[in-house]
Length: 237
Image 1 (tube, rainbow, N blue to C red):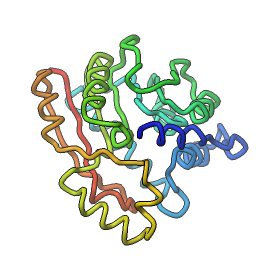
Image 2 (image 1 turned 45 degrees about the vertical axis):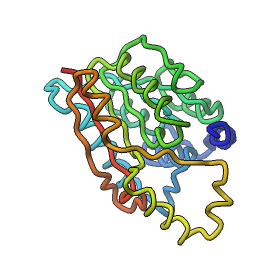
Image 3 (image 1 turned 120 degrees about the vertical axis):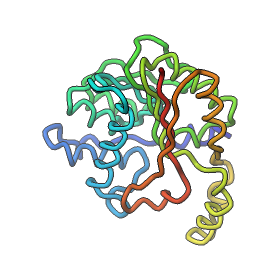
C-alpha cells in the first residue's frame, strides 16, 4: 500500500516560476505547497516558520553550541532545509519523489540529496541532527519505521526529531473528523492508509539505544491536525 502513496507523491513537483531565490517567504511557501501543504488557505508563513524555529530549538536542546548540520528524511522539495540553509546550517536529505527532489536541487545549496526510500539513506556523512516531518505516518508498518529510526540513529551525532506522528490513541477521532469534513473519505483514501503510533514505540527505541527522549505537542497555529499528532525528540548521551 505504500506504493500508492509513492505514486501519488511522484506526481508532485514545485512550480519553478513561482520560486524567487531572493524572496525567502515566497520560495518557502511554494516549496511547502508542492509538498502537500495548502499554505494559502490553511497555514500561514508565520505559523510554518514558527514550527521551524521550534524544531530547531528542540533539535538543539542541551547543546550549547547549537547544531551546525541537519539531515532530513523525506525532505520533499526542501522547504525545511531551505530555512536551515538561510541560517548557514549545513543540510542534506533523502526523498523518494523525483519531482520534489528535482525542485529541491534547484533551490538548495547542498549536493547531498538522494532519491530513494528512507530505508536506503547512507550512514555517511554524519550530521549533528537527523529529523523527519510528516513522513512516518506514510510507512507501511512499525518494522519499517524501526529500521528507518535505526538508520537515523547511525546518521545523527546528537539528536533525532520525528514530527507529526499520528497518535494511535486519537485514531478513532481522526477518522471521525475526516469523515465529517469529507463524505467520500474512505473511497478517496482506500489505498492510502495512515500509520498510527503509540508513544511506547519511541520510548522503547530510546531505551534500547540509551537515549534521552522528549515528547512535544503540535501547536502550529491554524493546523487542523494538531489534535491528532505529536512530536518526538531523542538525544544521544
